Length: 401
View 1 (cartoon, helix red, strand yellow):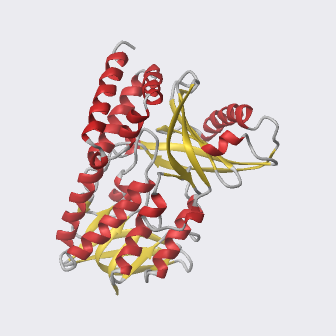
View 2 (tube, one colour):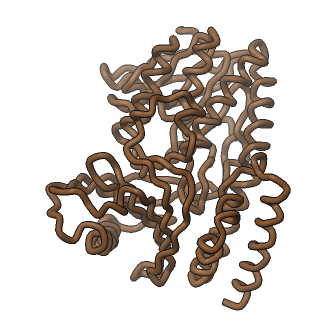
């Protein structure tokens, strides 16, 4: 049986960051990636928060557009401008591919077309069985520690007899999404390349929709998602109508040369209740580390990979201790904020008119929008004062809607 010290499953931002930082520290690291090309099947608008490249030591050429402007559209279609950042956009194949190559350069081995099938605890090791899709065989590897970062489709009830990672709320947080990459024969309006657009509205079938337009180097990413399932034809019809509205505003004189369609499950629910047990850690979207209000999760994913690598370094001879350390750091950094965002999103969804009230508050005060965007650890006492004052005002106004 093959042996390795650290096994990573998934070569997205979480997995590649964990592999890169562990391998850089001298830990023997193996990454299993189910796709043939890293990042090629990721359906994501790929918005990056300000300073992402610097935080994770990435080349700036992965950034397509710098976007200082966030446009929030309420249920009535009214636009509310919020200035921040600048944020950045990329594509997942470029971002994930770059991060994976850096992990390889640090010494990690990445095996593509390797699909996780099962894992179990065997004394002081985790035994992982995976399918080698290239030649149709099953292989087994034994690791001291395992980091699972397989995205929203992670189903631990099918991967292990151990029930540590089961979460009854998980399926309720899954989102059906569809995205078009729209390629034009000429550039769209200049404002399109400075703006991240997020739209919150109710579909014709009375389903709450979150839609987006993110600019890229050679196309516009236009997509939408909703909690639960929706037949493909209905979802496509909904996206066609939204894309037409975007086109009338941003590229009325341009011709669409071609459109690439992408669909997948994303996540917009509660963080997973348990993220570490018996030498196995769960990170990224598989751990539910996604902001339910806007779908952002790339930063949280990459940071979870960093926490996993550092926890293993601190407790190299004790997978249980490293898992405890990982859980502690992850929960302290993200859980409170992400749970608050879920509660906020559900509050807004109850009465969609509340979106407009919140967006008006954000657009009225840069200090409020910045304070809300920051993590708890980044907020000053004045930030908290501003946040509470605007939250109180919003809460009072929303209670009458």
